[in-house]
Length: 102
Image 1 (cartoon, rainbow, N blue to C red):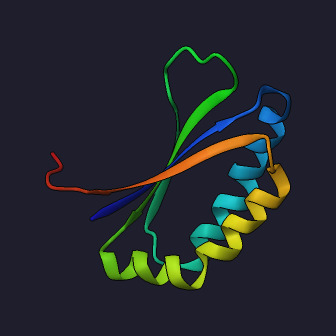
Image 2 (image 1 turned 180 degrees about the vertical axis):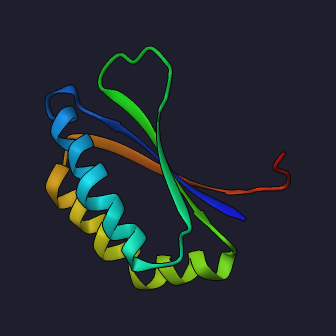
């Protein structure tokens, strides 16, 4: 399995609205696009100088499913997020390959 991790630091002044939008609109749209079998939002437990940091994790069965999502759906969904919260967040993406689960 592949974990597509999006780490986002969001400004305090939009935090509550952003988190609600992520939970109720953005993540359901990502899941509806296909390719992922699970998702989770985790708060990164560090002291921040500014904002709050989250790890949004989407699980795909394989790289093919992830690549299909990235090619056909990610650009529009990421643009929607950027347009909505421009200048109010910083994000980076990481791919993880699950090598063992217990």
